[in-house]
Length: 508
Image 1 (cartoon, rainbow, N blue to C red):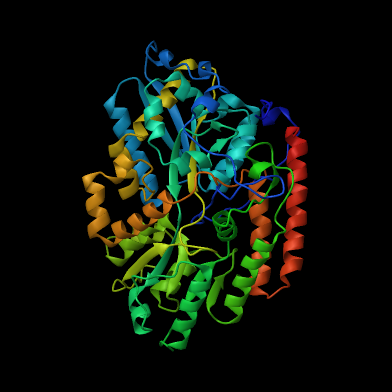
Image 2 (cartoon, rainbow, N blue to C red; image 1 turned 90 degrees about the vertical axis):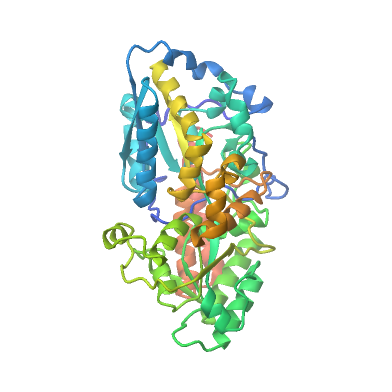
């Protein structure tokens, strides 16, 4: 177990952990774990059972204080959602506020995840100015722990006899992704996973069955070669991807490979990069070869907008790997259910081909489909001196985890169900079985269920620094045909410098 750190605002300040994060990029904190040499499996997850209960103090979560509160307790929630997800969160907060008199949740958007994290870090010097609940990307797990500002959910589970059954019902891979050294930290989750999108008509024109999508990277290359050989008018590159680190992370996870030491940062603070290994080279070689052979259109990591989606819409590409959170928006676009102003708010050109038919499949991996990592964001309970406020925060998270609200979070908020009761809900089942959006969400949910909770992925202090360096290396390899080993060596050196600085900053 990590020693309890002093809050970051009391330590030497540094800002290298704040890096640009693309608004639609899937991020993940679940990459295959191992020993310090990168072999073996990572730490297991769970809902905060015996191991977690022994390491947390239920007194951190004084639930009885809410009952004695004399007036409505205000809870401020920070998030970085946009579009339909933002609206759904606001609607759920309004529903909660109307359901009881004790707590009033105030939802505040903080722009992008980068802006939210920057603002949170800046306010560490004045803990009273922090929000009561903060929703951050899963790359921030180690930062949130080391900030010394959050109450672990495991403490509230230990304090709340009724909570254990709810958390035990959450998919094990979800709680495993956010469990570090046996302690579950966030209290709620917004979960996504990558999905393969494919244009049915283009696949059929090439003589391919759109119900049998490729399951491995080798099969994906073969499919791309068949599409290219079919000489379909307008098709420029069969596959389109925006260059981003999470692709490499996801494929490393699926192959049970660590990116850092100390069981991928889950047994102790990650201090050593394990980026340089045969699997990272293999992935880079696949990407570079796909681009060189005209099978993959790489969108630069610095590009703004949604060029990869437009490539599918314009039929210049037939396949796309992207986050499951885009399924609802894509389905709404193709069915004409989103008006021009809503399209603009999502950053999408309003000229959308609504005749497209999209098939969905689990993301191809090195050895099989759907093997990878959890993506999305986590809901943290920020600590405070007011006991009633801490209790009020937990009360709202319990409300959010109720089955009807989880169904709404999937249908409207675009995140995947984490409870079997939500997935089995008749409304959600009907959606899964009758609509294009539902079929896509169903594929993503089945992929989510297949993730291995024993391989929960990396927990890295300077995670955003890692992503910055990997994106730069991938840009060089894919767009400039740079030598792969030199690109990886450069990324590894800069990432190691960031790990050293973080360890020095937190006293690791």
